[in-house]
Every structure is written in structure tokens, then in C-alpha cells.
Length: 339
Ligand code: AHR
Image (cartoon, rainbow, N blue to C red; front, side):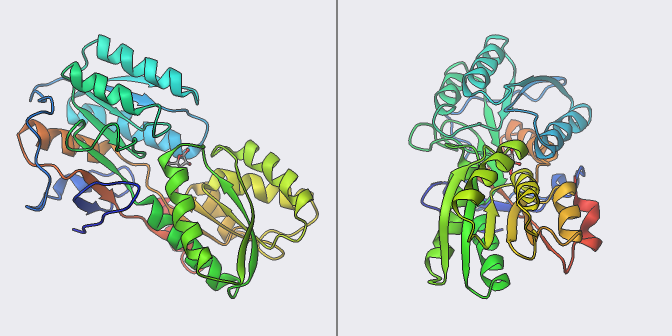
């Protein structure tokens, strides 16, 4: 177990879990004594089967999102969940209305990754008001509006700031502390993008030979990443490194770099986050330098948390997922973790 407070996420206490792809291993891990209490003000969750659970996905445009959705589909029957699923197609307002319609259907439990921190916070309060408990997975909401342990049960997810630190540490070593970096940011306003930027930029700021020459959103999407990289390459032909907030944008950047007649992995070092199969293949091919894993397998963890919460157990306000790291030294033997 580890305790960690960050400026952006004021969750008081955490429990660290390393999930295995598609496994129920995490179910065996018990919550310790140093936990936040299941506040009386939070709605109760009935212990019944089937439990009607709403899962509101943000979009389905990349392998990470598909793996996340699959992990909920896979766990539903084992967990006794009758699951209602929606897909917001990359729209905050659609995700909000999807969740509002689940509230109107009186689901027993709501689980979702909030696409952006601010627009998705009020609907957490609406669920609470309607007596429906909420578990947030993957991304978090603005804690000044809705707070874990007070307005929703918990946040289950990675430490995105730490992911940014790890990506930057690798890049500093790989470039000998000297680089001109293009940063491809994720979806503007998403906690994953905000915190991955913060973590990376913090380390770069401590290395005088490293400069971020441009930083722009590619919306976590491969083609958008390719287009943004194409434009930035023209404006900054002296670029020597790329930090992409996810594998898909890194793969888009690799395509743009090749189209510009440069060699990814040689002329330009690239570091990213996710650990998808495509990212790992690119590491094996020498085009991508490293990828910090960001596990999408929240289904079993959410099932475990829900069952414990229904029994009245104490739940930490942040169930922190710990992530692997892949580079050329271990990618071949780690391929089974790709998705
Ligand atoms: O919130 C997690 C991020 O969202 C993943 O890195 C990315 O691939 C996804 O779209």
C-alpha cells in the first residue's frame, strides 16, 4: 500500500494495485485499515444479483478504450452485473446525457471514466442526489466540485503525474539530457492529459539541456497526432524528441516523421504512455523508445470495490493502479501484457 497526495488530486489515502490483464487477481487483495470511510452521505449499494450497473464510455476510437470496455463486459457475468453500456463518441455533452439517462433508469451503480474533469463533475452530484453510488475509473473529475469519498465512492486509476515523470526520466537518459521536444497532449481538460503534462514538464524543467519547443493537443487520437506532428515538424525541423501522452498519438507521429524523410528512434527519440500492442510492436521495431504502461483493465477492480462497498467495508478514496514500463530491454518478454 502507498500513500500519495498530489496537487491536482486531493485524495487523502490510496491503495496500490497492479492488475493483470483480464484477470481477477486484484479481487484477492484486501483493503487495509488506512482508508477513507464510506461516508454516510454517500448512497448505499444493495447486495443483490443481478445488480444493474451503468457503464458510460467516452469513445471507442483506440485499443486502450476497447480494452477498457472489454474488461467490463468480461467481468459482468462473474460479478453478477446486468450492465447497461453507452458510448459518448468523444463528446462531453453526450457522456453527460448518457449518464443522466442511466440515472433516470434507476441503475443501482454508475461506473464511468469522465472524459474531462470539469464538464463531468456536476453529473456525479446528480447521481448522488438520485441515491445512486458512483465509481470513477481511469480519469477523475474536478475535486473542487465533486470529491472522492464524499460525492462518489472512489477513483480507481493510475498516477498520471508519475507516468509523466517516468516518461521524462527515460527521455533525459536516452538523449543524454539534451533534446528539443515536441509534446503531443491528450484531450484538453482530461485529467490524463493535465497530469501527464504536469509530471513530464516538471522533470524537463529541472534539465537545462531539455526544451519543450512546442506542445499541442492531438486529442489522444492517432490521426490527429499524425496531423499535428506533420504541422509541428514543418515549424520545428530541429526537433530531436517527441513525448506523446498516449501510444496512438505516438504511432501517428511516427507516420509523420517517416513521411518527412526522418527516422523515428534515430533522428527523433519518442516516448509515450499506454503499453498497447501497437506501441510495443513499435518499440520492438526500434521506432518507439519507451512506453509507460497505463492499465485499462478496471472491470475486475470495480467489481471488487462494489462488492466490498455493498458489504459496508471502508474504501480508499483513490485505488491506485501501478503500471509497468516497456523499452527495448524488456519489450519482447512483456508482449503478453499488450492489448
Ligand atoms: O485516460 C487514459 C487515456 O485515454 C489513455 O492513455 C488513452 O489511450 C485513452 O484514450
